Amino acid sequence: MDIALRPALQTHVWVVERPGPISTGPLRPVWRTLPEPGPHQLLLAVSACGVCRTDLHLAEGDLAPRLPRCVPGHEVVGRILARGAEVEGFDLGDRVGAAWLAGTCGRCRYCRSGRENLCPESRYLGWDLDGGYAGHTLVDARYVYPLPGDRPDAEVAPLLCAGIIGYRALQRAELPAGGRLGIYGFGASAHLTAQLALARGATVHVLTRSAQARRLALDLGAASAGGADDAPPEPLDAAILFAPVGDLVPVALSALDRGATLAVAGIHLTDIPSLNYAAHLFQERTLRSVTANTRADGHAYLAEVAGLSLRVQVNRYPLGRADQALADLAADRVNGVAVLVNEN
View 1: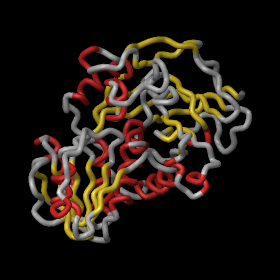
View 2 (view 1 turned 180 degrees about the vertical axis):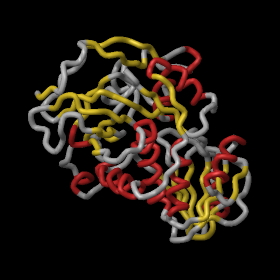
View 3 (view 1 turned 180 degrees about the horizontal axis):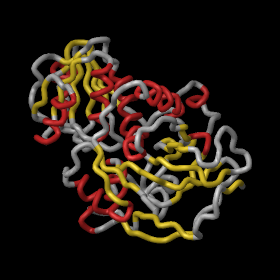
View 4 (view 1 turned 135 degrees about the horizontal axis):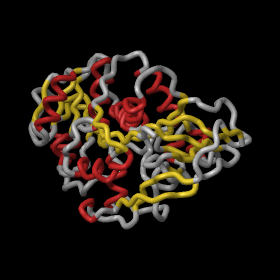
């Protein structure tokens, strides 16, 4: 492998020791031997990693662990320290981003038809593979994104999941040009998706329980911001549910105009109550899920927002306070997105 500099033999990481309520301290800091990249891998010195609600679901056991003592984190910005023998297109020192989708088979009918997010063998950073709550991490070069430009690392990190997943959810919601979009929940992904929709000419209505988040939504240009159970001021052409609350599915469906679509963006959702066909689905209203993303989604989203004055509401935490960042996220104390920064 090529090595830009000889790194320390150990790296600091956080692992999910025992999944459980965040109050029980499921995250533990440990030291691990610095890994060497395989043929298609890059060794990154992590500079920033976004803290996603999926990380919280993993820590608390809502997502069954797939890797013992897994290192969470899948919104990773870092510099290439070393690369495997078969890596092409990247140089040592390049700034790159690693996101949720970390591997697919490339052979199944989903991969061959441009739907690699549905690959039965898909693997995910921070769930199947150790992620970015770390000083260093290994990633597959075929699943990372070049990150040109001068936007700070801490502001780029959330784009790699919150942004990309929001982009796919917006595509799945099939919002017509100039349409009326409802956003339920207003955290990391929602505040980025709202800005993308506004830039495309949409009218955005935000429904969320947090008064602080409602203020942020209005500050970013939302036409209205109400409580999560409130009715928006006009029928919606599309809606996205970011809050992992199944009780909001019938609420959001009831707010849709005829022929409109609700996209559920989370990887985890509490149980959905019984739906009334006439009230919630009739007149060609559609309910859709969102499953991960394709690499094409990631490249398209990053290219689109490169030309926007995107405001990323960042709450910075040093890497050593990853447990506090997750606790704040669990308690709804994060307005925007939490990001771990490694300044060593």
